[in-house]
Length: 70
Image (tube, rainbow, N blue to C red; front, side, top):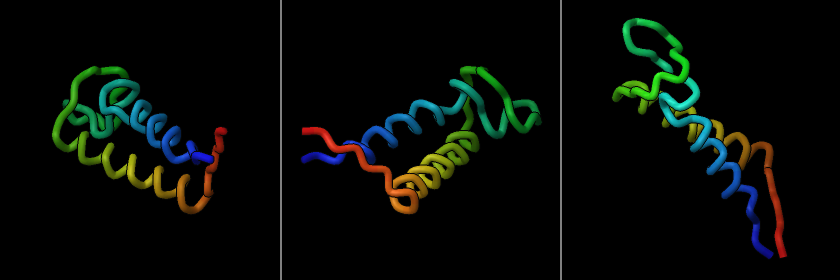
């Protein structure tokens, strides 16, 4: 049996935490959050990368999400 939980969690967080798609932290022009700007910066990529790995670690290791498919 294949464990699809980590794969689905990683894909979900990758889509949701893409800088500029839903929100961007830090935003451009001195604003902390910026919503649906479709622009990005190096700092926003760094922050979203840290959030991605943090959330993935929490959900895969601490919570232990497992989905099995035959």
